Image (cartoon, rainbow, N blue to C red; front, top):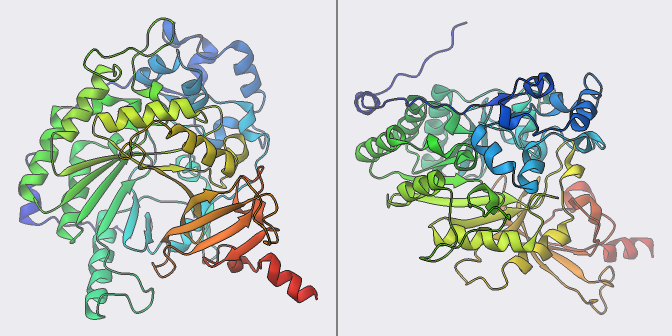
Length: 477
């Protein structure tokens, strides 16, 4: 049966008629074939050593196949930065360590439990849309590996299939119907308790691999559906900043002229300052005589263009990843330089329980210490970022950790960790509630605290039948 197409309104068609696609030569290398055969560009041939290639190829076809876990992909722009940065090489180069331990969830965050239609995740007031299934290059720690690698995922109804991309008509129909029901029910949905769906995150993959016309179709359709804020999640400023060209900004300006009430939020993804700063031959950063450090020209030009438009916000968020940015000095420079150039520091994340996560995840308590150490010497506005860990119940802040014992608290003999629920996946009823656990310096996920729950007001553990230590002791008596 043919898929029913979305029919744009006259207003949308008038805007879409102005949009031009650009031509982009990312000089992408997909896979390892060119590196193995020696047909990669001359300056890129030694990016992988023979020993590294042999170790990767030896795993092909096995249950530890690296290329099957996450396709290997890099742009020339990112290579030029990575060739002088061990951190960026770890980010983009495949390594056997990725599949030493394949423990983890195929659907991290149980996203499919919140997927009312294909390609959409609806959590509280925000919908996330999978509008693209790839990026210009691939991060080896990717939290969307199940989508990028087209892996089968079990859905709530028991069916098993790869995740599909969102379709404009399905999304628009869903938003209109959801918001109609919410309006008629006094502001909340009678079944889910969710409020109006007013914000959408275009994600994937990376929406910026799409042409301007495709991005424009999404923007105006979402605006027509009543969405107030549209986010575009992208790492393209790191992978290929030239994508932000005159045709892209002309499209954004035409969209703003047609829909001036809609705010755009670029959610960018810088993991390390090596992704946007220039370096001296000795590997040190270059001082800018006017203040701060010297940026890569193309990257800074794109950022300035975005920030020159008052209706566009730019926010950065990044996980803290082993051997990539688990370094307080690097994160301090990252936060300071981003804020200085108009990019807000939004969130830093602990790792997620995806397949193979143990190769990249930093222990929760270590990540908290690194972030807080990185914010020493930053001003209040530079240090806005919080540390978040995505529980199945919702986005949770690692709010505090004590270094000293908590007297009289069973489980707090070595200090405690305080988790604070920031955003509920289903609704906002538990916002700001906390869970307190006894410390475990080795914990990389919540299950590392199963045996040391002190207080569980946020119900992060009780939803799995895990009770606080005091309750367990009372039951034993």
